Image (cartoon, one colour):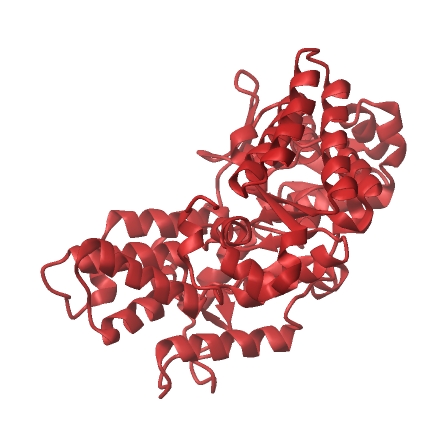
Length: 484
């Protein structure tokens, strides 16, 4: 019998749209990316596949016994080397087998680990991981799916060899091995292609955008809080919480907990919730992960409320319940975009700030989908004057007082550090490539087009308007110049 995790308590229909699309990729041996805003509940989604038998049965039927999902929280290996990451993957695989009551399989994987760990050699340890996947996928005929939660936190440390290892595992197991990466943005926007080129064909473009609001999951969370607190509130208040939070998982949960702990529900619920520190911190997490240009775009929307207030799918003036209106408006917006803008090239062609914001559900029909966030945006300032500096003693990059190192990929960090150290002068492309990419083999893979893409991604992360850059200036025919 499987041990009870919190995710096992959810109804089988929870997040059915996202799970259906993830499994479409996994069934064909393709990996995928689950992309959503901070606090929306991507980890819960991965946990549903790992720990909720009802979810697996409703989507896979009798075939669920031939799928094995391995949940891994990659925040646990942040700043760890590849040896530790491989060890973590083997341990996670063995642990997941134990939880599914597959004792023989777990013992075999643990034996492979025990035989290899004493050598303290990365290559030998990877052989143990290969043997584990061979055993499960080939001998036991299981389709193994690695669920890599919070992968964003490992991105600053990820190397080409990590993705090469995944390709090797995929080539051995064929269609019986795949991965799901939990991310805040598509990996194509976070890493330069050369880093994950070995795994590109199995991953690029396979994006499942995570909806803010899931009615089934939200109803469960509210009912669960009612049970454990012995309190409840009326349906009208529930609907108002969903409206104010846009159905965002963390915000809705925190808001509901606040209401349940209150003596009586205040009439001005939006003002009441907005004054709470935990709500402002959650809103700040969403705001701080946005790029400067996205922040500017949201400020423009919040200061021009007439943009889409007359939309037939606006929440304002609708006769539907709040939940129904959000779901309808969300579906309409996604249908209009092509629910999943899974082709990254299409996104680049549109080249609008709102494309990503619409895909993750922060903007729907020209409105900010979370009224509490809209209120936060009206009151927060956009950091436009902060100098971009590098602190050698801590090896960190700052914009004003904000540390932005973790928002950069390894190559973006090295590139920006080099340009800061050579601020004010034009750095030719060959000079940049030689100093940023030390390895000769890697240098050969950095084409002019690849360098231009990295520079553009970097602009999106530090410039208020990437199309009119202030800091990273391209000098035609010569190179690039940095201005702090």
